[in-house]
Amino acid sequence: MKIFISADIEGVTGVTSWCETRYGGQGYEAACKQMTLEVAAACRAAMRLGYKVVVKDGHGDALNIDIEMLPEGVQLIRGWMTSPASMMGGLDESFDAAVYIGYHSPEGSDTSSLAHTIEHNLFNWITINGELASEFLLNSLWATAHKVPSIFISGDEGICRLAKKSQPKIYTVVTKKGIGNASWNIHPKEAIEEIEEGVGESLEAKIGLMSIKKEYDLVINFKEHQNARRASWYPGAKQMDSNTVRYIAKTPRELSVAHMFMTGI
Image (cartoon, rainbow, N blue to C red):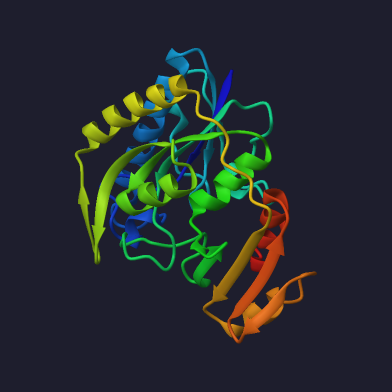
């Protein structure tokens, strides 16, 4: 039995400002420590139930998690595989479940001071089938393409609420609430305890796959019109206006590949 943990930093409790998410920035080391501790909590819960655990560091340069602070036996993937999998790089059909730690609200929402989707400076918003697309939605669709259910997410209140819309049975731990440029956080130790408990409960709940749609209508609104023009050259893509491009995919895998080549990330 195996689980895959995809980890980000903007949804970790206490993390509020962009400087805390960037190497060398004020508060970055403290944010990395809490990110590692929250991931370690999820690992302990899974290992206690007999699961092998693979963790993907999914933030920035993907070199944030301190492997020495994780339980022995955990495997950590650092850096990027340069594939459509992105934050899910390493996941395949052999995994029994996917867990998401430290996730955050998407670009175009107002429920996090750090709201973004993939790259804050590149997009105004992304939608899939008319709904704002978060990194969780993109990544859980990749998991679904590999027949891996998404069972647990921790992060800000906004992303936990959105995750419930696409996967109603998913377990959530709300680490904070975003209000303007502020975040209202739970205590770090409380977050660790709730994540460990929640991951254990979600694994025992035997949650199924997300439903598959007939098609995935991807719309990307770029901040710069030049990027929209470039994306419009992807086969099947159509430019809707100066900054907006649309692509309709038949499967989650096709959606992920199109997203990778249209955005260049």
